[in-house]
Length: 230
Image (cartoon, rainbow, N blue to C red; front, side):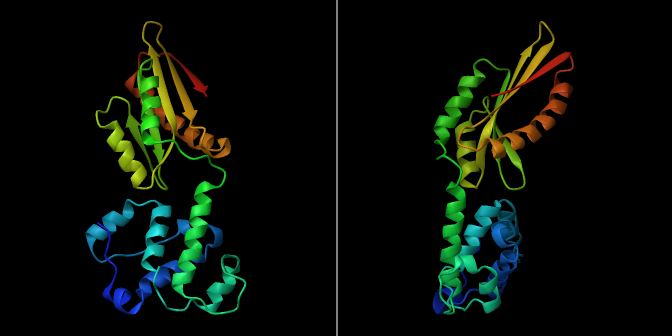
């Protein structure tokens, strides 16, 4: 459960100093600022909520907290990230800065990527692969972890919807086919076409390394494994 906006911000247009400092510290990382938003919370439930957010969701939440903040951004920060500001020497507020950074976040989300299909379409693709596979799972990437939505999970649609709403990005499919009679197995990966190959394929390659260990443990009778990419 996220923290509520402070009374000070609602009544006087001043966000908490810890929120302003969090943004300034993140901006020290320049273009990757949104990956470095860190905030300490007093309540455990807020800390747990924060730990589940992706970097992009953390950045968006912080910008929302500063959206109406009338405090002036330090001149030194303005100089460090000059490219995000209008061509003017006038002081700007955190509210103005938040709107400019929000535009930057939205641009990053669309550059080099086609519009992602609906989660229903993705689940249908997963189910089609499952008809002829031993294992079929859909990989959803977060900033710090990956979760899998398996074709045999009764609530697979709800699980994918929840993952996406929490900032997860569907990356692709992992499909395993076991030929027990011949003691052979095939591991196939497919990156969704919405992702540039240079981004999606390295991600899936790392997952394959993890899958090999699980498969060899769970299917000791399989003597020969083949790997395919689509």
